[in-house]
Image 1 (cartoon, rainbow, N blue to C red):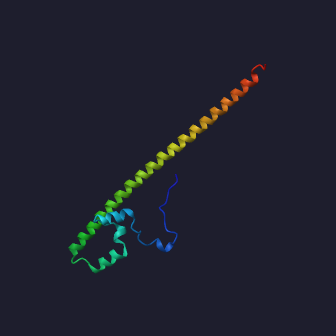
Image 2 (cartoon, one colour):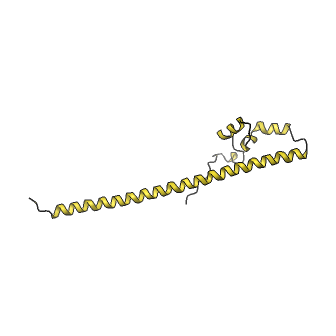
Length: 126
Protein backbone atom coordinates (compact mmCIF):
# COMPACT_ATOMS: atom_id res chain seq x y z
CA UNK A 1 0.00 0.00 0.00
CA UNK A 2 1.43 3.37 -1.01
CA UNK A 3 1.96 5.78 1.85
CA UNK A 4 1.89 9.47 1.10
CA UNK A 5 4.17 11.92 2.81
CA UNK A 6 3.27 15.44 3.77
CA UNK A 7 4.73 18.00 1.45
CA UNK A 8 7.95 19.48 2.70
CA UNK A 9 10.01 22.41 1.65
CA UNK A 10 12.84 21.70 -0.76
CA UNK A 11 15.08 23.79 1.49
CA UNK A 12 16.36 21.63 4.39
CA UNK A 13 16.91 24.78 6.46
CA UNK A 14 13.10 25.25 6.56
CA UNK A 15 12.39 21.75 7.92
CA UNK A 16 13.04 22.65 11.55
CA UNK A 17 11.01 25.85 11.47
CA UNK A 18 7.35 26.08 12.46
CA UNK A 19 4.78 25.84 9.71
CA UNK A 20 3.42 29.10 8.37
CA UNK A 21 -0.19 29.84 9.29
CA UNK A 22 -2.57 28.50 6.67
CA UNK A 23 -6.07 29.62 5.75
CA UNK A 24 -7.59 27.68 8.64
CA UNK A 25 -5.15 29.26 11.10
CA UNK A 26 -5.96 32.74 9.82
CA UNK A 27 -9.71 32.08 10.19
CA UNK A 28 -9.20 30.75 13.73
CA UNK A 29 -7.20 33.89 14.56
CA UNK A 30 -9.92 36.14 13.16
CA UNK A 31 -12.41 34.49 15.47
CA UNK A 32 -10.21 35.12 18.49
CA UNK A 33 -8.71 31.64 18.68
CA UNK A 34 -5.17 30.42 18.53
CA UNK A 35 -3.29 27.64 16.77
CA UNK A 36 0.25 26.37 16.99
CA UNK A 37 1.06 28.02 13.66
CA UNK A 38 -0.27 31.38 14.89
CA UNK A 39 1.54 31.05 18.21
CA UNK A 40 4.80 30.33 16.39
CA UNK A 41 4.78 33.53 14.31
CA UNK A 42 7.48 36.07 15.05
CA UNK A 43 4.91 38.59 16.28
CA UNK A 44 3.32 36.15 18.74
CA UNK A 45 6.73 35.04 20.02
CA UNK A 46 7.81 38.63 20.66
CA UNK A 47 4.50 39.39 22.37
CA UNK A 48 4.94 36.33 24.62
CA UNK A 49 8.43 37.50 25.57
CA UNK A 50 7.15 40.94 26.51
CA UNK A 51 4.17 39.62 28.49
CA UNK A 52 5.47 36.64 30.46
CA UNK A 53 3.11 35.01 32.98
CA UNK A 54 3.05 36.80 36.31
CA UNK A 55 3.13 33.67 38.43
CA UNK A 56 3.32 29.90 38.33
CA UNK A 57 -0.46 29.42 38.53
CA UNK A 58 -0.95 31.65 35.50
CA UNK A 59 1.74 29.73 33.61
CA UNK A 60 0.11 26.39 34.48
CA UNK A 61 -3.25 27.70 33.24
CA UNK A 62 -1.61 28.94 30.04
CA UNK A 63 0.07 25.58 29.42
CA UNK A 64 -3.16 23.74 30.21
CA UNK A 65 -4.99 25.85 27.60
CA UNK A 66 -2.22 25.19 25.07
CA UNK A 67 -2.34 21.48 25.85
CA UNK A 68 -6.11 21.47 25.35
CA UNK A 69 -5.69 23.24 22.03
CA UNK A 70 -3.07 20.73 20.95
CA UNK A 71 -5.36 17.85 21.88
CA UNK A 72 -8.17 19.38 19.81
CA UNK A 73 -5.85 19.87 16.84
CA UNK A 74 -4.58 16.29 17.18
CA UNK A 75 -8.16 14.95 17.26
CA UNK A 76 -8.99 17.00 14.16
CA UNK A 77 -5.97 15.71 12.24
CA UNK A 78 -6.68 12.12 13.30
CA UNK A 79 -10.27 12.43 12.02
CA UNK A 80 -9.06 13.93 8.75
CA UNK A 81 -6.45 11.19 8.37
CA UNK A 82 -9.15 8.56 8.91
CA UNK A 83 -11.38 10.20 6.32
CA UNK A 84 -8.49 10.42 3.84
CA UNK A 85 -7.61 6.75 4.35
CA UNK A 86 -11.24 5.75 3.80
CA UNK A 87 -11.42 7.91 0.66
CA UNK A 88 -8.22 6.34 -0.66
CA UNK A 89 -9.55 2.82 0.02
CA UNK A 90 -12.91 3.62 -1.60
CA UNK A 91 -11.20 5.15 -4.64
CA UNK A 92 -8.87 2.14 -4.96
CA UNK A 93 -11.87 -0.21 -4.79
CA UNK A 94 -13.60 1.78 -7.54
CA UNK A 95 -10.47 1.77 -9.72
CA UNK A 96 -10.05 -1.98 -9.26
CA UNK A 97 -13.73 -2.61 -10.05
CA UNK A 98 -13.52 -0.46 -13.20
CA UNK A 99 -10.38 -2.31 -14.28
CA UNK A 100 -12.08 -5.67 -13.79
CA UNK A 101 -15.15 -4.47 -15.70
CA UNK A 102 -12.95 -3.32 -18.58
CA UNK A 103 -11.16 -6.69 -18.69
CA UNK A 104 -14.52 -8.53 -18.73
CA UNK A 105 -15.88 -6.21 -21.44
CA UNK A 106 -12.78 -6.65 -23.60
CA UNK A 107 -12.99 -10.45 -23.26
CA UNK A 108 -16.71 -10.41 -24.21
CA UNK A 109 -16.01 -8.07 -27.12
CA UNK A 110 -13.22 -10.33 -28.40
CA UNK A 111 -15.45 -13.41 -28.02
CA UNK A 112 -18.32 -11.72 -29.87
CA UNK A 113 -15.99 -10.67 -32.71
CA UNK A 114 -14.56 -14.20 -32.92
CA UNK A 115 -18.07 -15.74 -32.96
CA UNK A 116 -19.12 -13.34 -35.74
CA UNK A 117 -16.04 -14.16 -37.79
CA UNK A 118 -16.56 -17.92 -37.35
CA UNK A 119 -20.25 -17.63 -38.24
CA UNK A 120 -19.46 -15.53 -41.30
CA UNK A 121 -16.85 -18.04 -42.51
CA UNK A 122 -19.19 -21.00 -41.91
CA UNK A 123 -22.18 -19.42 -43.65
CA UNK A 124 -22.78 -20.48 -47.25
CA UNK A 125 -21.70 -17.87 -49.72
CA UNK A 126 -24.24 -16.90 -52.30
